[in-house]
Image (cartoon, rainbow, N blue to C red; front, side, top):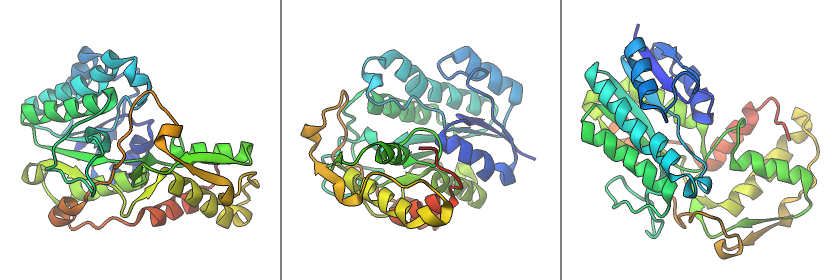
Length: 301
């Protein structure tokens, strides 16, 4: 049986990966206290002890705004660590799966981004994630780099759960409407990863792929959809009544909601390469959101 070393198992994607990867081998998922991506020695020690056939790196520094004041830590986790993982994987002839982000682009393209489009991150987070990609490619290890966008789940911290929490506290809400992207369920990312690994040998398909749900919307569109879908299920599931009504979610511009780090105005990713190589057509973002909420036995507000 193959051994799979999984980082970031307590995160949104990592938690789903533990289940999705289980049929493919023995999943070893050390905690961040054991495998600390900010500590090079920690990375090398764990990999040399486990000697996995595959490394799946779902851990990352994802605090986009805080990264502007913690660039060294963000670079250590997002930029340097993937290169160390790649070096160790190559040394033991293992493959590497790594997750990146739409933030490697500046969002000025009018349509969905392809893997071959020029990168131009606008902030520390995007720059460090791009550095991680480049470090993996420079090592030359067989790899799959999946760029995804607007990741959410029904656990942890994410936009969907934040909207539900605020909807339980407020009667009105203003949400940015001029940033366009695709909400992508963490389980969809994990299951798609497992499907790609089960289909083809990683050496044959090594490269960068975009992996996001289908379609697109704005943050305002996501917020409205979340409340509508929640309300449609509330009585049958036994969830509490929310204070916020969909019609009281008001669209605003990015200028009206300033943040420390700049966000891309366009985060849409083209999944064409994923479909061509693996034959995978991912569901529309709204359908994924419906499945995520259907699967949520409880949501803590």
